[in-house]
Image 1 (tube, rainbow, N blue to C red):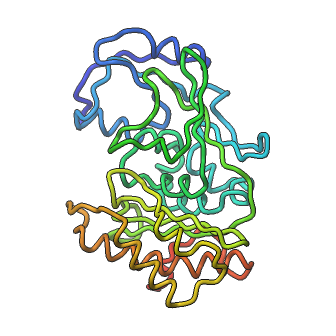
Image 2 (image 1 turned 90 degrees about the horizontal axis):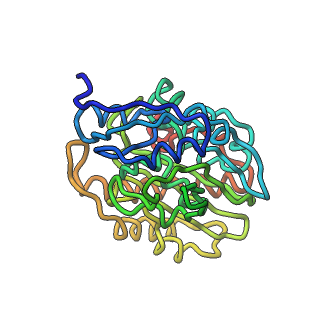
Length: 301
């Protein structure tokens, strides 16, 4: 299918240049182009019809993974493949590594960026739940200055974010702290597929838990009820895990669509959580498997 709309193309040479190009008035508006894995698909089906694409791929200030002021910093242009392969991310944000490794296909992961994923803001975005449990912060530049937006306030609705008009995400930061966790993704088959539902779980050695879900609400969401019932428990027993799984089914709001029924999504959230919690406990004690598995596929194999 060919692209259905006409648009201007401009390649930005710097962040300042990109902001200037985005600020120029043009019929249909201007949008940034990085990996383009979502944007090009939307251009083809007519979901998006901007008047100008501003190519930001070559801006060095938006690239790279590093430690910065006690935080793990990932530039906006960081592709999923770099996250999967980065020793820094694997050490300080391994749940994100697990989620990134399940995103789409190898070819897509080589191009799709972490910022593009959260800016697309589809309910099934793979990085959303992981960034929520990490308390990540999204750093944004606008023509009027910079601002930082917590991940919990980033997602407003399907394909809607807190990004100011004409703004650009410059990077994502995650606080460094000792922890472990797991990411589970339900798909229709092994291989490349969008999530029918996903669950991210994070726990620290003191028993503080963070839980988040994807594909089961208009946006990725946290699981406050489950977090409260697990709070302070370092090794939840089978009864508590069962209680947490039942609670998880009550705090999601899935829909029925071509990929799954609401009933199945809700039930599987409980199943995924009941498997992710024990895996997180094993990992925080140093006994669990390396990151990069899908707990659902491991149980099935």
